Length: 458
Image 1 (tube, rainbow, N blue to C red):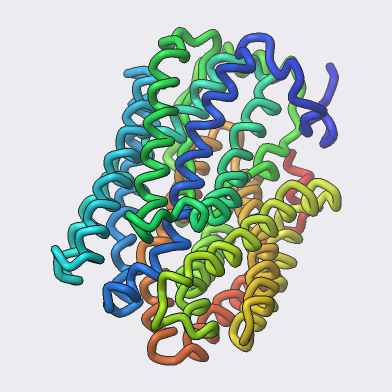
Image 2 (cartoon, rainbow, N blue to C red):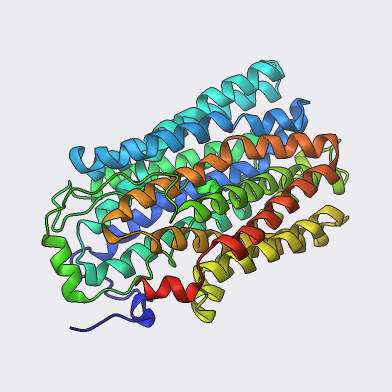
């Protein structure tokens, strides 16, 4: 019986990736994930400028995302279950249609508000309503994509395929802020990226309908619940780092599921990791919510908000690149375990947030955001992996669902509260984020099992 080691879990190349899933189909699934991630981060880069142009307080812009994040958290598990019954292609189509309708209607609402056809309050209310289409229906696509890949590849092929698919989220978070300023045209102004990404998604949806065969799974597969794209939880490769033998994997595919007890949020094995995920997730969400307004303030662009999309996109792109460096470079290169990733991640995130608090130039903001994102990029997979390693194999599905809910919960109130505190005093806003980072470090030192102990459970 051959046991897989860590190097076996890393893809050597993408050439001839799977025998059962052609490369063209894999590329199409990659695009489904990429366009949603890129669209959402592009939106983040222009919304602070749009809010300033509408002359509404920063807090209300951040609050407009809350309902969508709540819907994502509650609807994603439902779509994941439904994909097993109704077909994964159908769920991907629903997700893309939710994205297209949400971005198109949000763009129209913001255009009407910026040109005086709607008042600021009405604009934000309509925006929040249309944004909820993405949280409610857009959340159908990611678990369906993952399940489609899982149901058409053997376990020996699956790791490489899913790793490539999950990387699309990370790539999207880089491309979105980079493309947003380039997509702005004079006729549409700041809402241009909304309509541009809606058109791109229409093209992907058309290709999906024409090129992707209907569901006929070759292997059993279930859709895992994935975090929303804006949560920067695009890579969980530490979580899949359990060693398994090929024989065990094949047996597991064929074995019938037994009765598995319900996994509680208060389970003592999960508790320190879930608390850490909530605290660290709120710190990251608050920082992400503040940074766009910070750029406008520190660069003196409140009077000319249309000039803020470019520098905000640069800052977000630097953060996304740092996140990818952490998840694709540092973690596999240094073989960091879950506890080490959490502790080092929060330490670096705290240092980056401190730099953001005092940065007075675009260069300083980029460096601070990059360092903070590097830290959060280490923390997220560490927390996810820890929650996976402390439970049994039969409990993995429940653990993944709980972790996804924790990730989504951070984006319900943290961005709005962070911006509200920042509006009252930037020092208070950043101090609260620093306290959250410090709390994770204390919890990690006292409550988390060591990486050596976790590895013994494998």
